[in-house]
Length: 220
Image (cartoon, rainbow, N blue to C red; front, side):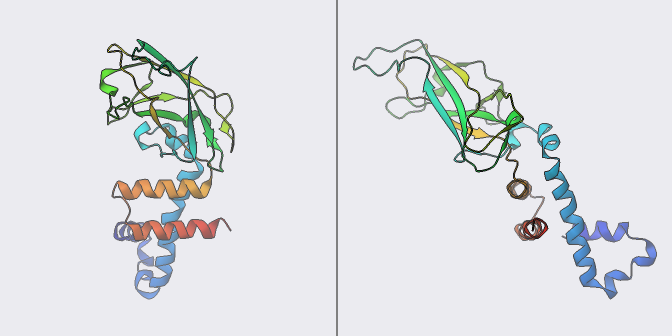
């Protein structure tokens, strides 16, 4: 909190500088409130903040937002013979089991990997068509189309088609997929934002814990 302390003191009128000596507890309270307000403001304006941020910074919702992956048509690898196919199509949608609404236009699915029957990742030997871009680690992502502003709890998103070209005629499992996006729960959004700030080294864990405690008090 040293940086925030110095900023607050610098912003105070000159004749108020004595407050830092006479009423240290008051300054501490002021600092906590001043620190918390911009964080809370960022959460309330999350639609605008996250819309401008790289997809790499979107929170990982996998586990709460479940990717539902199905073959488009029959499973081409279900037979007992060793033949394969040159192209496989999957229908992918998201089922929201987070308990909170999700910002529909923030949702993306990331191809985390595709494994051969032996268990080896063969993503580099396959050609995945139609992605909307890639993360910094090179993994491809697809945006989930949205009709409504929010995906409600226990609701399912629109489907997308992921087409995989298989030039080497490999036999592989459906892709492992992760989901990234924004929860609209204020408390969850605060937590995700603070965790992101800690990972970037902007906040110490103690400061994040105090801000989270303030968020809980403010929501009562």
